[in-house]
Length: 362
Image (cartoon, rainbow, N blue to C red; front, side, top):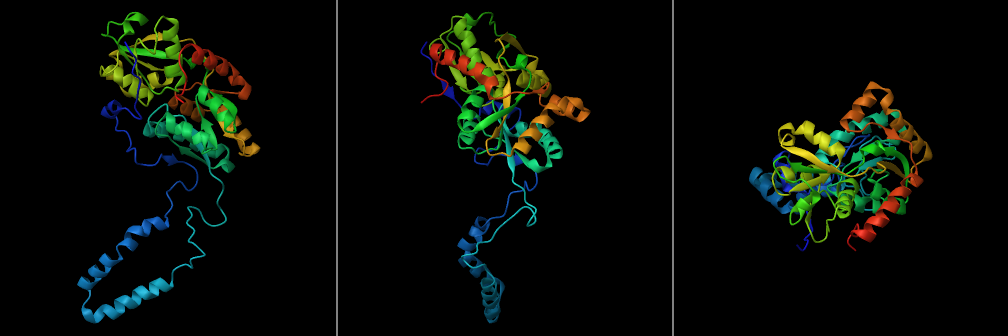
């Protein structure tokens, strides 16, 4: 068959279990001091642009003999406005108490709401351990939105996958830790128990779902596995990129794809959150492991904050609270790592692009 790749920003099938956020809404930003959205002049534009309507309303409320008092009040209010050369400044913290915000941006292995629920306890812990860091959690709609952010240096702290780690290094980010055990970073194929799939050759002519073309454990590594098992992923199957790990699994459950690629943490979480659906699915194959996701800091983050965050992450398994945070993230622990630790990924990607496909479409 001729392959037709399909890329969806967020797959609608996941909404059957939990509604996805409105794509017109900004990303969730939580944690740290001053996480509420600030008031801006734009908030008043509706009032200003409808001034005539306001006057009409007043004309119905006040008698003609009261017009003088109404317009006098409006004139006095206008006299109180800030001069044009001194725009109003809005703040979420008292003057003199603001500290720089450091946004922690994980790659979207879950939908934004689930990502927020999973990582907010980690942000709260880091803010207690490193108060000067003032960390806020920021989620991303999908992999492409996340990658656009770090290429524009729009996050001080990142939690990218290993391929994104290499790309973020080009934008001035540096590894401070590895997130999870290396043995846990592998691709897995989920199929329905009644699918009849036995060997990779059974996938020919059928649909396989993935979160994103740039998902290393959940797309790149599974496709390399299929390549090594005689499947031309560019011709023999239809690759559907459905936006999130959960959507990849749900596509299989709903029969939209014959197999779905993901990796162990989202599959474990899916089994906890949706046991009835998971009971009808099974892991068919898994790939060899590679180095796990990273934690990175932008090159202008103060060294004291980098060191404090790194140490706080490494200390997580040492307390009951830390163990609970790790369990919620489906992560065993964080490990010491640096940029050089991810050279093995560069070699893997070079082989994949030479033998299978480009990671990104140019």
